[in-house]
Length: 145
Image (cartoon, rainbow, N blue to C red; front, side):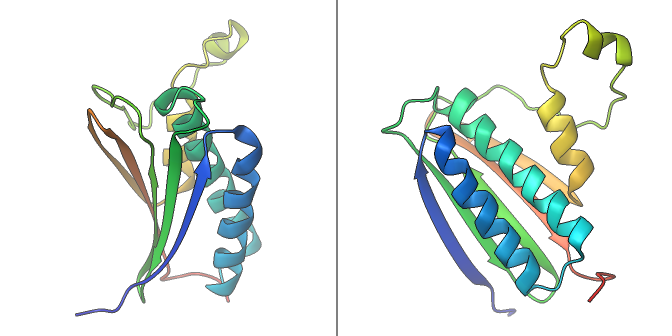
């Protein structure tokens, strides 16, 4: 059985604390030897996911926590972002084309999930009445040292 190391960060649902998680993601990416571009992808994906958990999951209620767990092993970095919201029916990570017309008209709903899916190797969501967990994976093979 492969050993997995974990780093956990819990923040209140206040956007100012998102930067703590983003900085943690950068440090972990550097420690794992990810390239600069890969670290930027990781930071942006985690930042977007945390902001979604704060705004949409926890409805910006500061007493509700967002838990972020960075779990790493020889093959991958897995980041789990959990909120304490009421859950969601379905989250679509299909890599649909973002049309310029929709952006110009302000139809940005769902763009965050598209962006996250474009920045990581794999992502999935599970949700219940007690919250939503978004899991992001970045695989280590082929990374630039």
